[in-house]
Every structure is written in structure tokens, then in C-alpha cells.
Image 1 (cartoon, rainbow, N blue to C red):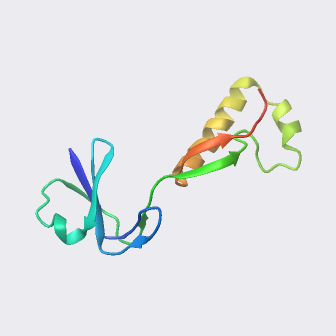
Image 2 (image 1 turned 90 degrees about the vertical axis):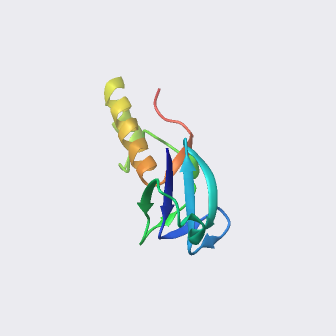
Length: 110
């Protein structure tokens, strides 16, 4: 089923487009065009007013297990493998919720 996203700003990776909408179907972008071209669309709509729709961001340097501790290595050494796993999942979930959809992890414990 197709979904139309519109109402807010749209950033296509190069420029900001006002008055445009994005049509998605099957997890893929089908079309980006001026919103008026979708006037007869009868499927699901998502109002993005007040926001900006943009491609997922890539962070090429993360440490998915490191926190903001003064000495994160010492903290990691005190955590069990299960605790490290949960910590990494929590940090990566926060990363994803912040709009980063791909990362390159540059090292951590185990």
C-alpha cells in the first residue's frame, strides 16, 4: 500500500524543497513531486507539517558501547557480555531515533 508524506519541508539530499510531497510504496520512494500533483491520491497520508523529511543519515565514526564516562574503558571492563549487549542496543536505538540509519562502529570491547 502506498503512503504519501507531505505538508512539511522535504530535503532530497542536495536541496530543500517547499510544497513538495513524497510517495512511498513497498519501502521505496516512488515519486517526489509538487504536492499538487498528488491531489487525487486516495491512500494513506502522513502530515509532516512543522517537520522536515530527509534521507537517513550515515555516521562513519561511532563507538556503540562507549558512554560519556570519564574513563569508558574501565566502565566497559566491569560490564558482563549481556550488559554490553543491552548497552549497545540502547545506544544504537537512540542513534536510529535521531535519524542516523547506518553507522560504522570504530571499536569497543569484545
